[in-house]
Amino acid sequence: MTKKVDPRMHSAEHILNQTMVRMFNCGRCISAHIEKKKSKCDYQFNRNLTKQDVEQIDKQVNEVIRTNAPITEEWISRAEAAERYQLNRLPSAVGDKIRIVKVGNYDACPCIGPHIGSTADIGQFRISTTSYEDGILRIRFKLAR
Image 1 (cartoon, rainbow, N blue to C red):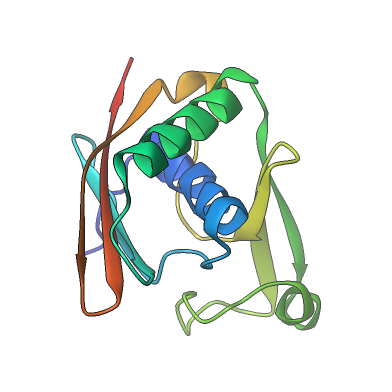
Image 2: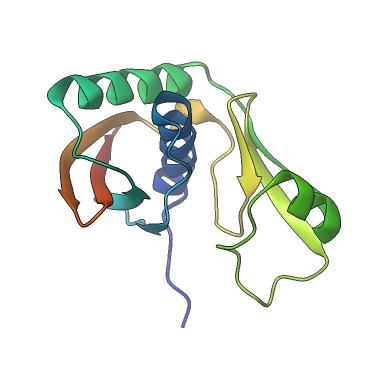
């Protein structure tokens, strides 16, 4: 049985990941649990987020959402993907062609999950809570229409 991932939430995860990379240079999440009502991403990090951090992340993610950027895909060879991206989160069954999901000019990464066609369809992003333990920052977030 495969888990059902919500396309809006999954698309928002891409934007959150790139925002974390740009703001904190921490890399993309090391694990995620994406559901329709609420989702979470875990990052290797050195502290919990401050209230100001949360406000900045929310603001940046929502600014990207409001750009109405297209969410597209391209297929590239595994060799090219390995040169440009980290492939460690892809399932081992992925073949010689790797799907790269792009969120406008903001983000691009290998992905096998479902997405929507435009950031405008994501809705309002909001971090609901964060926690920090043993080098792992957990960000929980929700979307509103």
